[in-house]
Length: 222
Image 1 (tube, rainbow, N blue to C red):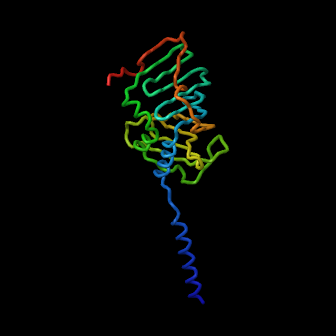
Image 2 (cartoon, one colour):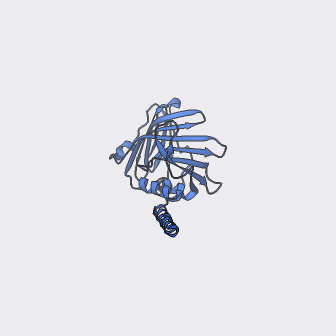
Image 3 (cartoon, rainbow, N blue to C red):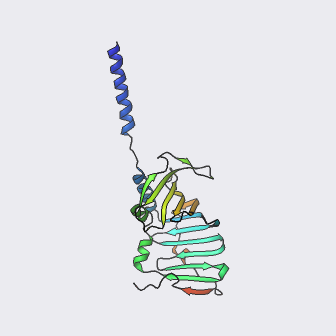
């Protein structure tokens, strides 16, 4: 009788082990790859964006269209705009009545469209607490949190915490810790994908009364 019980117990343990370990173990690296693949399959993206840094908060709407069109229309600061169309980066700063532009070569514009692939190449991912969803601070949502640690000293952020909605594989928040220990937070809300955003949205004419400053970052001679 004892032998039969031991055999039955051994069989149950083997069954439990089989079902437990036959499930796919998703590593942090694989999870980040899945998120990257999700974004790579998008044609366009629109969301509310909140940027917090050094005690200041900026809000607006971000629009993205593959392969490199990007636009942010701010509500705070009101009327401030950032637009990138693959060849020209334009910033309109209403407080200074200034329009800043920067020409970008084709090599730089193609790099701008690499998105999460750059993070995967330059940062090492790990789970903050594990693969199970945890509450996202300040919201009623739960997210999977990934910690991206820089591979080399050339990166601007020491680490980046990426909070991902486990159902949609969309990024809800990114917290970047600078080399000086400062925090830069990007929140994305009301995310919409593949809405048919036209290229015309990324055509921007700044007010005629603004002062123009061309190639304010560098003079493109490549």
